[in-house]
Length: 181
Image (cartoon, rainbow, N blue to C red; front, side):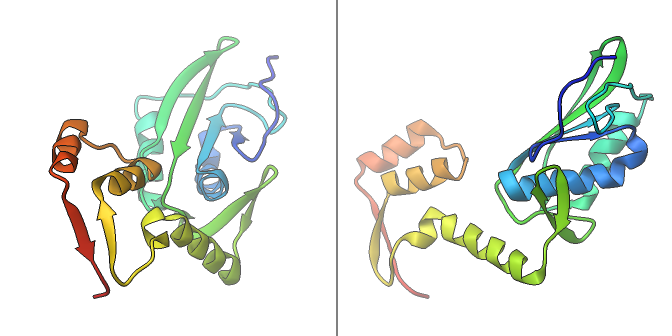
């Protein structure tokens, strides 16, 4: 029997999609810890590949459950793979909008466990997320926000920008001024 390794802070194994609820909780938990996670269905906790029945709607049902029960919503990559002639499902998630909830509750990954967050820990996570936003770190009440600073903020946040439009606006030497509202 093929073994694909151990569960970690970024990898979770579930024997079947009958454990979908627990799997979704693990995805939210990994997103809160690392902003990234992989969930496999058809793999035992010890890493042994046992296979998973996959019907016509299985992947769609997983996708819909993730969309409905992880908030804020994420788009996952869901793939059917064949290992050792056995069907498995690999789900990969990325997210930058912490904190993420699963079924209305918040979890954080610790080793290979999903631990529910206390209200205090959740507040700390939200405060850390706000502090990591580059635009919130720039002092006020009056400052210059150049197009280059804005572009850096966008790229740091994982957003894409239209290079041509950005360069045209930057060439005009425009600076946006703002203060407290």
